[in-house]
Image 1: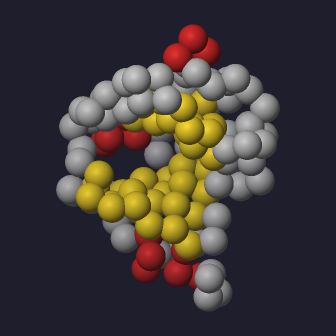
Image 2 (image 1 turned 45 degrees about the vertical axis):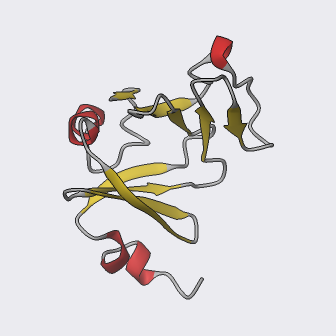
Length: 128
């Protein structure tokens, strides 16, 4: 399951609702990274490519209330304050984990690409 915030600045080249529809029912097969770019390899293409920008990060809450969040994120992250401030999309996993993408300064970007490692902007990056 997926929820999105209607933010056409962060979602680039894909409408937030199209991103949500694409993610619904998808299986995440792998997660990859190069520089500040992270992409999720799904069971079918296209795949989401997330550019973390200056302050992009993820926060997660597990069914037992355990939270994981970057130290610098300036918002409370727990079950009582969920989803966290500045969230742009959430992925609710079958196992009960809830993961949110945070874009505090809105310099972050979410795109959909068929193969992020072989397409710009990732393919144009130097070695990591």
